[in-house]
Length: 78
Image (tube, rainbow, N blue to C red; front, side, top):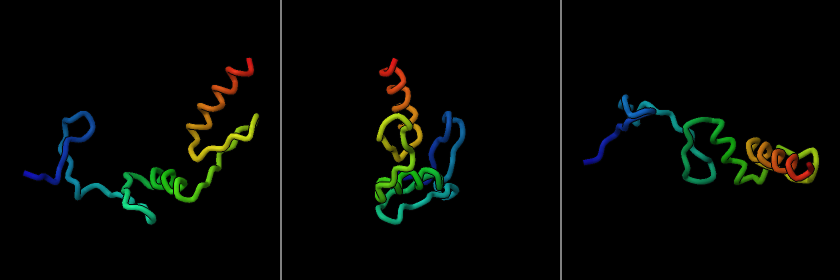
């Protein structure tokens, strides 16, 4: 039996699928829970990498990947 609701968060609250706003990718069939997630995903299609390392030529589409790279670079320089 299919249902249009699911347990959210810690499983204590039922949420209707109809009450969730999803943001569709204009290029592929993926859906995202926020505009931010859609923006990050869109970079996989465009190839945009706006986050650049100050030490080397590394570029990233996600800020978190640049942060991790910088930690690795900092540890390798020491």
